[in-house]
Length: 243
Ligand code: IPE
Ligand code: IPE
Ligand code: MG
Image (cartoon, rainbow, N blue to C red):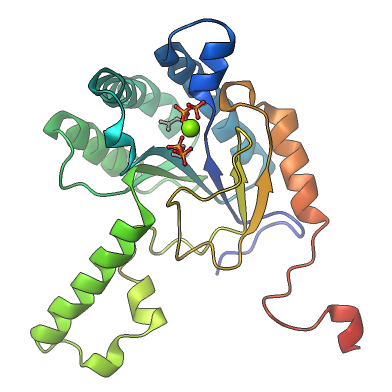
């Protein structure tokens, strides 16, 4: 496992929620909230990088988000495409390694092309790993992992006894990233919304009512501070009681 600064999470994951409400409060259309959300994302990536976080996973589009009005879905697809085309150069200069975590099967070829390109260009970068969860769903991910293992068993590459938590983990989209230490959710909802279901088993969760487009360095710092105050027990006895 990658080690980082003491007290600092190695892997932070963010559920970037609240774009629509941000726009609504300003009597603006929802899509302007999404556009503003990209600015918040750029800030968060830079901040995570500066602070020495190794991995940042951001939830950008869920498998359930296809159920939104067609107009909004189209806008989000175009926004992602455009953002990657315009930002890839700078991300590469900053040493960021980009990885798509999500279901590639029903994405438009233009989206997949820009993603393949981004992953290829930044593959050897040594800075922050930016996992972009796009067309991502935790259940879809676990079902796919199980299917991959079932195929290996049927081909005789594995036996049924090899189907374990360790082998299943290796089939997840996020492999080889370690589990997130900290999951931040903006927008105040107290749920995971199908995000990193397997990987969040022992993640610390930080929820803020701040809407994603308003999420700034200072908010990120608060989340890191909160994380730093916690004792992670992983099912064991409190460290003091153990002495
Ligand atoms: C999160 O903001 C962005 C995506 C899900 C793509 P929302 O669009 O869910 O914003 P709210 O929750 O409606 O405010
Ligand atoms: C979660 O937000 C998905 C992303 C941030 C991409 P949603 O707005 O889709 O979640 P629900 O519908 O409130 O659970
Ligand atoms: Mg939402």
